[in-house]
Image (cartoon, rainbow, N blue to C red; front, side, top):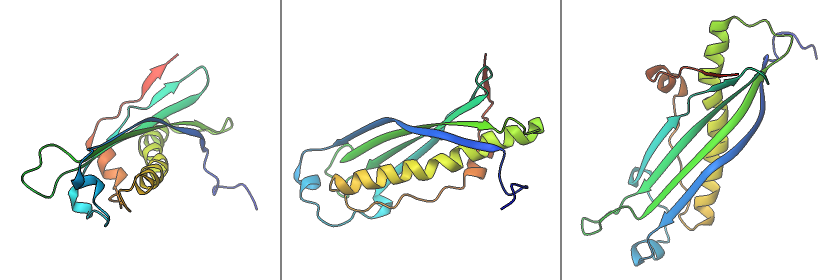
Length: 159
């Protein structure tokens, strides 16, 4: 196999789930639930972290944060039944022999970092919620390109 243009000069080096918190109300509405919770009962918020370029190591660090809230299906309940916050950070670089146009570099960092990290975060959350007794939760698919286009993600430069 030739290394031609099929291999991206943008390298995914590592990731870590760097934030995770979960809270479930200790009451019958939560403990007695045995069926899967419909997707529309979960409130979902996603945020992209500002990418940071560490010039001395020639790496980029970016991330994604996700919040989930399970609201009650009855009017009598106050506050969410379950809340979850999780975040992921990843480290990326460009091949040392890559000659990348700065606009292409910025585009790759802005769009590809969240696109690459989001499935890892989704898997962690889905597995955790299933193990925690919340059943299978299908998180919505995200159009990362449109979301990143709507927000200003200037790359922070660190020496």
